[in-house]
Image 1 (cartoon, one colour):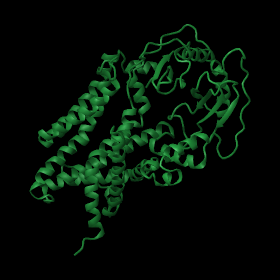
Image 2 (cartoon, helix red, strand yellow):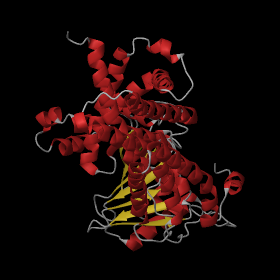
Image 3 (cartoon, helix red, strand yellow):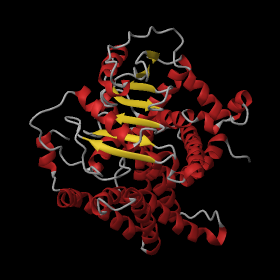
Image 4 (cartoon, one colour):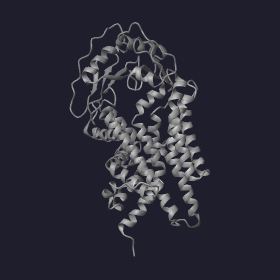
Length: 494
């Protein structure tokens, strides 16, 4: 007798869920943490408090000083970039790329333009580490494709799980406490039903925002072999959206000074035209006849942006005359659709309430996968099914070790990453790479520990290690930076 649909879906749900869960637990945990990537980056940067200043200089004079500094560093650079203070930093960050392709940076006090010691704070990947881990596992193109395949496996597991659990909504209200497999099943079902719309949305949008990479055929059929590069070039030429936008009047400038030293006046025009505070000034081909100054404006931060479609925009000026030449105050409908998908995925809308909802739902998704992976082992520990013949006991033992490393070990590695930020010397060359290496090494050690220790002891020891690291982190932070929770509270930086 052939197995029915539910029996076939049960097999698919079990194995897609188990194999995918070992990495998806880490991917989901990293994604949940990356919701707060800006605050994490700011904490890990550990920028010292700016020294007190008796007098503050007008912003226009500070920007003029920054332009003169950049001109003195490399007058013929490919570009200069001035990043204004924002959510992740209180300083003025200057970046320039020389003709050879080397990138350099400096940091200024935004109140008077004084050059700050380099590096200002700690060089770190910060919260970007969790985002990169989330979409590529720090494995470049291979990791990017692996995460895509795992996302498809997650969608398969979700849809097959809906078919398998015919009492799924009834089971949501059932929670049987105790050490047995029924308690793990109830936890798996409850987390799944509670966040099912979120899980489906997050998996689908995760694939959709990279559609040109996962499905390059349409792009190549229109643009040829170098499809992506040519498509991006076309997009960059579309400075004006579907409907024409009137350019603002040129600002009043001093004829005896270069336009790039009068970006304060350009800033006021751009902010009035775009309706948002300026966040970055890009000066391309400085000192050349085709010099161009572009001012980018967007809301103060993702935490204050309420809408799915961002009002961000940019205004470009001729770098020689100071005349506005291109205004992008909106996006074509197709670009807006892609932006909505991206914002839905990365929670860059709705403020802090939405970020916390994403964080909680992401942790619930992680718990759903963890319960399912543990349930697989408990069920077969009580009643082995012999899927691999004589190798079955060894496979079960290896699977349980993977479970420990994927769930408890991932938590230990994430917390150890924060400790590494404080323990690695602040001026060590390449310290940001060493932080990531520390994360990967701790995660690998958690797998080795799980393989050599009895399973139940491994679970207890790794969760105890995670708890201990959490408790010690405030003390490590205070000893390494001299700052503590009360310092942050007094400064309103929390």
